[in-house]
Every structure is written in structure tokens, then in C-alpha cells.
Length: 113
Length: 113
Image 1 (spheres, rainbow over the protein chains, first blue to last red):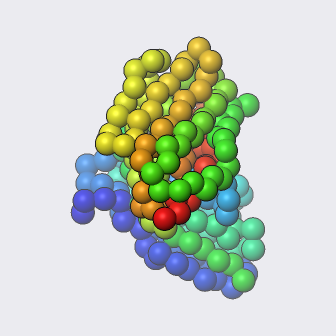
Image 2 (cartoon, each protein chain N blue to C red):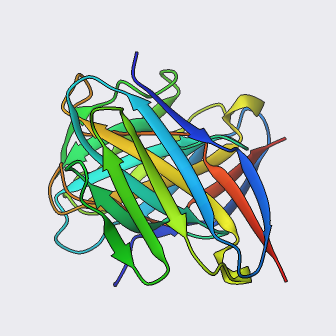
């Protein structure tokens, strides 16, 4: 596709449920980033992939958060046992290389009740 | 700790006005500064700045970087209601997390008819 695609656009989860958020990057982009954006804040870095390798996961807030990109294209961010503080917009971005312009998807708005 | 501060946090102007948005930063090993426009969809890339004093221009929008004073401005002339959005400033650095962008909180711009 022409841009970064994320699904679902909206997700409502009951506290304790597991969720999976999908990111389809721009074709051929080596680098993929996940960010978390709380209401009224700028995006905050979660994790970074170069092809299928997860090179940095320093921003993941807890071990309930897990991300993968097994074939170096589509990525999934999984949150286990969701809690209310996980409510946020989760943004995915991709770039040709790690230092190039990052192009963002529209995000997944997660609400945990 | 790396820091990106945007001001003002919010702004209301009338159509036709000119606005200046500010972004100051403190980062280790600065690489680039990027501006994005965020509406209720994917943040859209506007500019990437790496060198001081060179203005980048796209239509009614322009931006410039001052690496000595550690700030950038984004100017919008002859504003239109379609310019209403959150404008995000982000800084890339060659530091611990390697390639993640460090975002400010954004400036929320509302252009009234």
C-alpha cells in the first residue's frame, strides 16, 4: 500500500484481556517503530525493529508488552492482561533506513475499561 | 535526559493570520529535527532539518533550525481552517536508543473562520 496501515483503528478491551495491534509498514521499509501516545502528550518510543530483528525495546513499559516482526514486514504489538493505564493511541512508523524520515500510520486507539 | 519543549501548547487565531510555533531541545548527539502535522489520522511529515540557518519551505509553511541556540520555528502564513491540527516537533539523536524520535507535547492550533 501507499502508506503505513494499522488495524484495528479502535479497540475496547476489558481490564485483564489480551490485545494484539497490527502494523503494515510501507513496502520495502527496513525500519519499524512503535510509539505510545497518551492524551495531550507527544508520542513516546516503545520499540524498534530493523527487518525482523528487534534492536531496541527499552521503551516497553512492562513485560506485559511484547512486539514481533517475524518476516521483516508486518509487525504486531501485543499487550497482555491490559490495565487502564494502557489506554492510549498506539502509533506505528516505518522508514527506509533507521535514520530516514519516519512515516506514521493512523494509530490504534485502545481503551481499557 | 533528552528534552523537547514546544510552545505555545495551544493557540487560537483567525483565518489569514500568521503563526509561529516554537520548539527547543536538549539532546545528546543531535542528528535531525522533524515537524509533523497531526489531525485525527496519521501524523503527516512536514519538514526534516539537519543544518542551521537553512530555511525549508512548502507552500505557506516554512521552518528553520538554529543549532547554536537549540531551537526551531515553524511558520504558517495566511492560515486557513484546514491548518487546524496539532503540530509535533521531534528530535532524532545518535544516542542510547539509537534511532527513536523524541517528541514534544505538541502545539494545538485552531484557526477560526
